[in-house]
Image 1: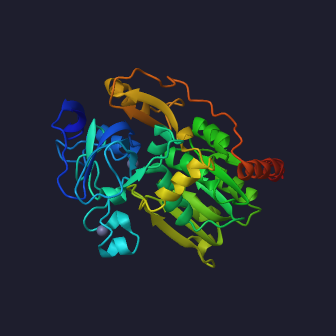
Image 2: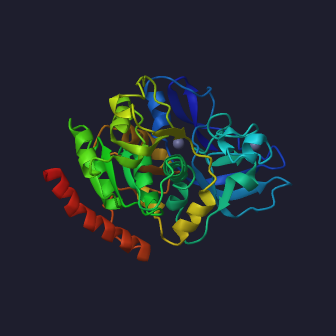
Length: 391
Ligand SMILES: [Zn+2]
Ligand SMILES: [Zn+2]
């Protein structure tokens, strides 16, 4: 089979590999229909580094058809269309009992890292009954692909870690894929309003079309005071930082409210040195938290997608086949306004069905009562925001 492997440190290549087989009784092998590329993974390859051993098949987001199951797999059989959580977990160790599946002592975040991943025609998934989820017929492959890791990360490491409650004010920092997914799942939580501040103008307009009440360019010098003004100077009850740069971390300090919560999503950036206690913090109680996805909300998010309360497929803006991988890589790493939010890659040469250099224009769709209510909230917030920014 064809697979994308680490050829040498900092170098990836498409090569022929033996088909994976079921190794343990709880394994399944799936034939990949669609996989995605993680920008964070690719950035390290661009820097000429490789966190992965030579020979490893990369990729931790995959949708496919079950091909083979081990003798103890009871929930799936060959032919089922499934999505694989990026987190595999045994369900029996202490971290699993606490729901911290990404810290599982026997699994965890290992697909495409410790074991071969999804950028291949077939992949072996351990603990298949726990890691795989049946994809209902009304969900597209693209929608399912966005539920493997990206959307659960936004929901678990952003919304849940940030303890977002109905009626809270929310600021999202960043305009990349995790930020856009956070905008998407915010539909499930009804904050009073939410503002997104990021560096890419395309990212900002995408966030608005996905439902952000208001967006601000965080490259502007006065972004902190603008954000504060929009919150009536009180600051935000919840700040979700998807950027985790020294600038964004500093910004969280300035804009979080008294008794507010900052959720730093997958804080792994290097070189962040900042004092948590600034002048503004001296008399305040603020909760700073960071987290990763455990994949524990995937089943609930599948239901939300099934009932159109969220539309994860909107996050896939570009599609490629394996024979256009070079182009996929270039697009993900490009510093261009037309760069994808997320790509969907098919191992087959089914021909290009992507959107080329232009970002897909998101149609303003109504997705039921809740969404209409939500749009209403946004409409009433915008004139107020304009007023606040003028004053
Ligand atoms: Zn990822
Ligand atoms: Zn475990």
